[in-house]
Length: 184
Image (cartoon, rainbow, N blue to C red; front, side, top):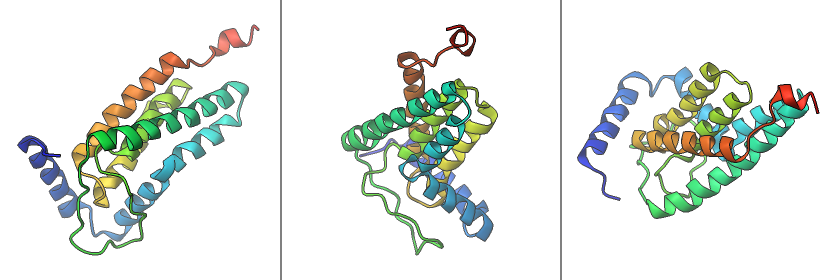
C-alpha cells in the first residue's frame, strides 16, 4: 500500500515522539506492552463487558451486545479491511524489551484501536463514562504504536472505524430504555 507523503510524515513524527519521550522507559514500556497484550482478541473489552454484565439484566444485555459486536468488528476489520488495504507493519530496529504476540494480519487499520473504540462507544451507551472508556481505548490503540506493531495512522483509522461501527451497532441493536423496561 503506497501511502501519501502526509501520512508517511505523520507516522514518522509520532514514532519520533515515542522514541524521544516514551520508549525505553521500563514502567512506560510495561504499561504499553500490557495494554497491547490485553487488547489481543479484545480480551480487555470482553472482561469489562462481563464485569459490568453482572449488575442487572440491562447490563447483561449490554455485555452480550458488546461481545457480539466485537466479534463482528473483528471479522470486518481483521478479515475484510486488512485484506482489501494491505499495509506492512513497522519493523522494530532491535529486539523488543518485553514479550509480545506477533500478529499474522496486515497493519491497516489497527484492530486494537477499532475494537477499543467500538467498545468505548457501546459501553458509554450503556451508562459508562466517556472520560474513562475513550481514553482507555486510546491507550490500547497507542500501545500498538509504542510496541511498533502499528503505524500511528493505522491507529487513527482504527479509531474512526471503531466509532463508526459502534454508532451503527447502537442503531441496529439499541438497549432497552431502563425507565420503560421497569414498567413491563
